[in-house]
Length: 95
Image 1 (spheres, one colour):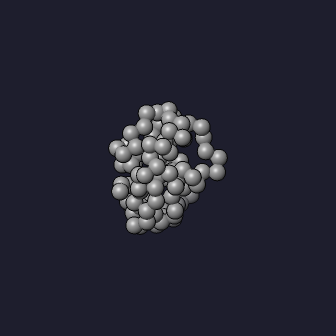
Image 2 (image 1 turned 90 degrees about the vertical axis):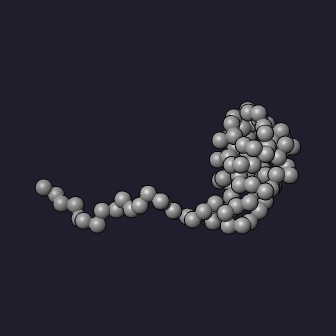
Image 3 (image 1 turned 180 degrees about the horizontal axis):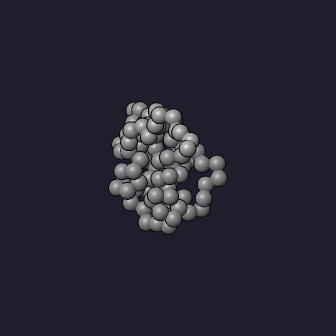
């Protein structure tokens, strides 16, 4: 079991550009564990694509596509920002 990024970079070992069939064959038994504890396989995630591209140009391309399929809440807190608030409590003044 691995997180999505680890699965794509270390377990699947695809050369890009890669066809969706090649990725599915190489990664069909790779299990992904999300932050909320849920699990799925890469093959199951690829099956969720309504109109999959013929090829993925890079692992980043595949990663972003698969992240868009991940269930909400499975990859961390929604709208989380660890940079702190940039909201200024003071009202702006017009001169």
